[in-house]
Image (tube, rainbow, N blue to C red; front, side, top):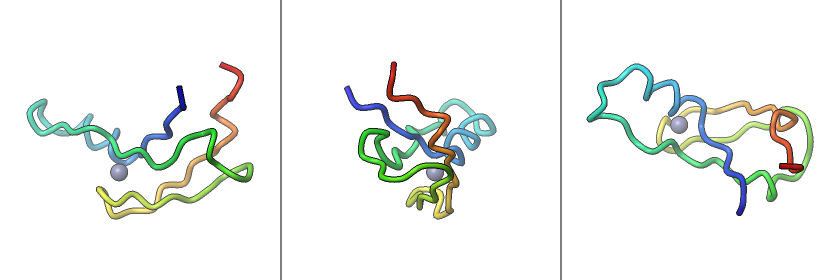
Length: 62
Ligand SMILES: [Zn+2]
């Protein structure tokens, strides 16, 4: 199974809104598909914001 990278803005939003307003966080990419290392910028179309993800926090060894 591929490991998704979720939008941190979506997750943060879910912590602030009531339960009925929560939504599935946007999947920005899959770890397996990411080319490059370090901090990568993704665009979240739900938040309409740029999310900076440190790809080193995700391990492929799990
Ligand atoms: Zn988002």
